[in-house]
Image (cartoon, rainbow, N blue to C red):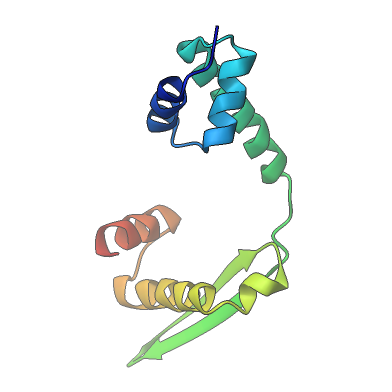
Length: 118
């Protein structure tokens, strides 16, 4: 079966993946879009499993204090290049502020606080 731009577009819309990745999945499944979605899901899981074993040994420790309270947060990443990135530093500072201001009891409470408050 010929892989058309329409098929690739539909698969991209359903999966959010790149054009070439979608085209490759469609070629491997002879144009079967459902099989392509499943193949991409499995490939994505394999990639996630690979990445899960990597160590995030770099990072920042951010300390924030206010009247009568303090928070110390460690945010890790895989490379020292990321630690130098302003966005990463701002994120780490925002997490520390969330801990200080939100007073979460545990990680789940912190994640809920961050999710609902930006």
